[in-house]
Amino acid sequence: MTKNIINIGLPSKGRLKHDTINIFKKNKLHINSERGERDLFGYIKKIPNTKIIYLHARECIEQLSLGNIDIGFSGYDLLKESEINIQNNILISKKYNFGNANLVLAIPDLWLDVQTLLDLDEVADEFKKKKKRLLRVATKYPNLTRKFLYSKGVTQFQLVNSLGSTEVAPFTGTAEIISDITSTGATLKANNLRILKDGHILKSQACLMQSKLSTKKTGIKKIINLL
Image 1 (tube, rainbow, N blue to C red):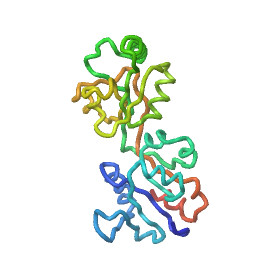
Image 2 (cartoon, rainbow, N blue to C red):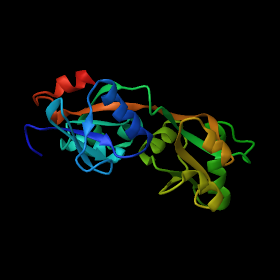
Image 3 (cartoon, rainbow, N blue to C red):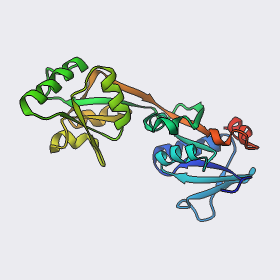
Image 4 (spheres, one colour):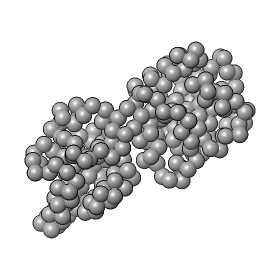
């Protein structure tokens, strides 16, 4: 990356991209792209030494930690899911009132006797004793899920990496329960799942982040203040 250019990473798709671009618009910082909406690069006329790079929200975190982008927008959940050495290279400059969601543990509605993590721990023990295998938890957030369950004393489980719609895992034989991000809980309910009473793992929201490797770069503070 060119040393005198400030590289800004924006989410490349979805509601997070739309809401992030609105922050720039509200602050009269219009983002231009030479090749239209599908262009993965852009620039801000008012700040000529900037370069906009559209990235997957998870990739924004990785590139911030490497210093390949100086400022980036992503979710708090994705930051906390990343490895600790990645988190140590990133500063949160501001949290926004959008992208709000919760990472939760959800179980099938049919599990009537399971309401809390204590109940889940008993089920996990029964699985190991009677079925000779571990309770499976499908998730895209293995680090946060593992840490949360261990902190609550639940240790007899196996994490299953979810590549698609996590909600279907308990009904396809992939896993017994899930850990997933949800904003309203409507999708979980529609798929006959419910959140454990004490199964809230993390509250998330959109954040403006800065690479610690870029703290001395000229113009960084000015742009952060504008946003």
